[in-house]
Image (cartoon, rainbow, N blue to C red; front, side):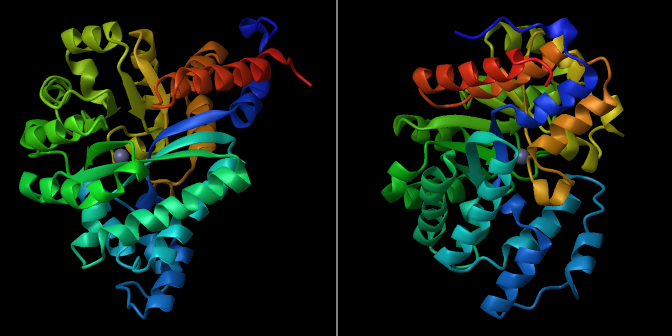
Length: 351
Ligand SMILES: [Zn+2]
């Protein structure tokens, strides 16, 4: 039995330590976006691949993005070093170790098979490598892991359909499908058939919408693709009717603050619309998106956000952490256990 949480008396300094210490789930992380420059160069050496960057510093210097596309160009270059099952294992393991240090207890990681199959890498190599790291993370770090296969929306729906079919032999190793990559000009409805096919397979459905794309993309992700979560979704505020619906249906939004600033969706964290999303009663979660590229993992996102937005309260922090569990795709018993742990961290009082 957990003590009641005394939100008004949690000091700012204590709140920042609670944000770090609290158990949390991450629901929007592209595993290829967790590849740090050092590992990119190590894998390139291992696989005899010559990168278009002289060294780690030159690669890091290329991380000055102006929009989503400028990031994707560097991101695909980084992913080109992944060749063997062991490479995918090493990439995912590095993220899991890092996430565990941030007290992430559950993560639902996106992977982009088309980025690899287009280079001649077999689907089985990708999924088996990630699955191997996930099993080890569960055993050695106590981290709960699920995989979500994402389709690249700048490619055709036929390509997505072929990708899903190629992945179905590994159906037991992933729980859902998503939609990522260049949003503008590629509305969700372009992928209606492949999402219907995934739904037939009992897969969970999510999609990026309303990051750079308009609110109409969020509507069609909900109505045409029938997704259960919206990734990003920050542009929903431009459409009051949409905001009302997202609030009424309790649709989780996986918001990624540092990513939004790095990709110029907002000028700085102090201008992020997260307080407005919370005030509208939306089910917001905080996530790192592509942490190696956007300057921070999950705790960095939480702490920098709360440092930049003094109007955010301890209750807001608790709400978003709780949302991360309640918006996840695990069963209700696991959600309840994690929420209980979260409650006890918040109720413990200042040391
Ligand atoms: Zn994303």
